[in-house]
Image (cartoon, rainbow, N blue to C red; front, side):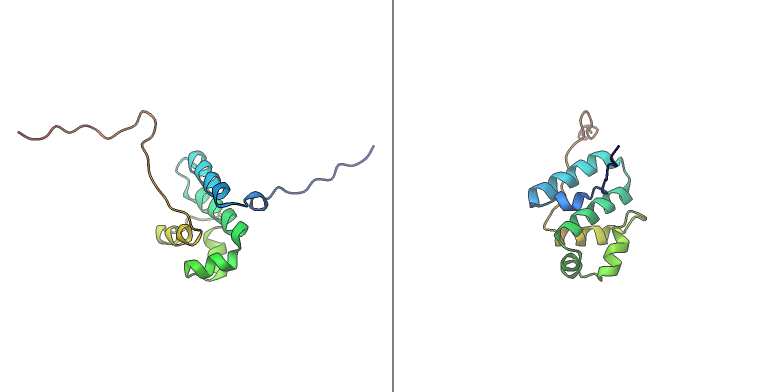
Length: 109
């Protein structure tokens, strides 16, 4: 019987285009359920796909602090997230959840 050899899957190896990176981040936001460390890890995957050194320079961060911030072990501050998103050439946007909405407030008469 022959042994099956497996290798660890690394999503960063499969994120080749800006569209794939944006779609991956969108999917991670759907799955994160409010877990900011999960989003940080997803941004780290995208940063590795683009090249951590370049992303760190573009974000104005050291390579080491970028690795720590996007490791998924902790939740980086929002300022760091915005710097990284900008350095990746991505942007954040919002939309209403299905069935969600703001309460209607009648104007005062």
